[in-house]
Amino acid sequence: MYLLDQYRGTALSCRYAVPQRLAPAESRTQLEEAVKVAVVDTIMRHPMLQVGMMDATSKTPSWIQLQSLDLTQHIKWLYIGEQDDFEQTVQETFRIQLDDRFPDLSIKQPGWKITVIRQGDAPIMEVLLTWNHPQFDGAGAKVFHEDFLEMLNHAENGAYERTGLDGDILSLPQAPPLLPTPIESLKSLPLDLRYLAKAFWEETRPHFLNRDVSQAAWCPIRSFPYQTQFRAFFVDNASLLAIIALCRQNKTTITGLLNGLALITFSSHLDSTVAPAFQSSTIMDHRRNLPPALPDAPWARSERAVGNYVTQLPHRFDTELVARIRSKLPADAGEGGRSRDLSAELCRELWAIAAQNRREIERKLDAGLRNDLVGVFKYVTDWRQTMRAMAKKTRQFAWLVTNIGVLDGGGNMSTRRNTAAATTTTRSPTTGGGDIKSDDDGQRWSIGRAQFGLSAEIPAAAIEFAAVSVAGGGMCVSANWPDCAVDVVLGERIMADLERWLVQLASQS
Image 1 (cartoon, rainbow, N blue to C red):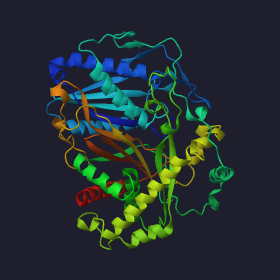
Image 2 (cartoon, rainbow, N blue to C red):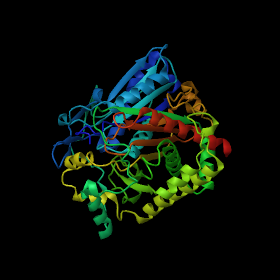
Image 3 (cartoon, rainbow, N blue to C red):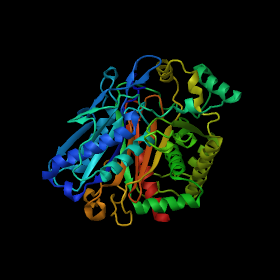
């Protein structure tokens, strides 16, 4: 997708509380050294951060061992003035970097970087990790931030020397790196004949034989001009806890709830003649299916591997269900005001849909690796040709949900003050950055909030929702869509619905 310009990058940004000794502007050199050494220690724990891609344009690209890394290509510092709006700068940088391209893959440089945003003596800094998805997935990025935080806190005061580090050049081990093994090389991925036949038919079926009204034909796949539209909002921790309690009462999860809310908002904004039914997709993590990590694996446990272990679970919402949802929408529902609130009837439908979504996910978990999409990949001989062909077909999914779960921000959660003000607008997720408080009387690093986002994926879902939470620090929900294919007004109204309804549900708990 990257080589065809159908995708640009993925990002996970975290707001770090800086220890008091490093917060003053005059400690800038020590702060930069502390960050650089913690990055080095994280690189050495995760070999996927050390490798480049060879033969990227061929049918069989591979990873190549590198002799060294120039850390100036992977650590960027952005210092802003006291008069600048910190939150606005974070959001602008996040949006820009989603669409930035990485250096030419022929340079054989790892496809990741961090951008650190600092403002004066503020006791916080934003660390934005951006990466090319072939390098690792969202769960791997969460591990990166958690391990980076661990390295910051475990570094000895002033001990900034590391073997192999000369200025900004990090010499890498000469021994071949032990990379996380792809799951298809570790485990059998059995495919039932019926599943395989269905996958083959859907791949090769002529367009004129496609009668599936649940596909997103209302949103034709367009590739140019490439631009990501990105929106996000935050849910404070008290509201998140209330929503989680409701999810448990109704036997579902945040992921199931987001799928249910998406169905209602898409049903309300699209006419039945255009979209009589829907399909969506949930991204799932295969790390739970991995065997134990090898004894000499530096990441120690399989669930801590920085690599690519994602799969996809499709969901279908038939015409009868969607018609029932639409029949319960208020006739006078405008684009604002209380008429957009969920009625009691719609809430009952919502929780039924969310619970069903969770059951589908549980069935997939119980099935393990049987009839998994990754198992079909072995029959793909040319990925670039496959993705070109996909861009000429009818779009399958109206939306996608990826939720990388709860990030451990470290420190004493009971004493950390709330890092995100009450749920904010979809235009700019604002937060009282100064509310993030370093633990242990300001001597330890911690993470108070996170934001996860994807660039537009041209042939994938029309709108992609991404969620991440920080323990004790609330949740961020973001959305992206290709500007050339999805109307901005539609995207913003859908995000406004999600935000409004999450606030409503939190108040009902």
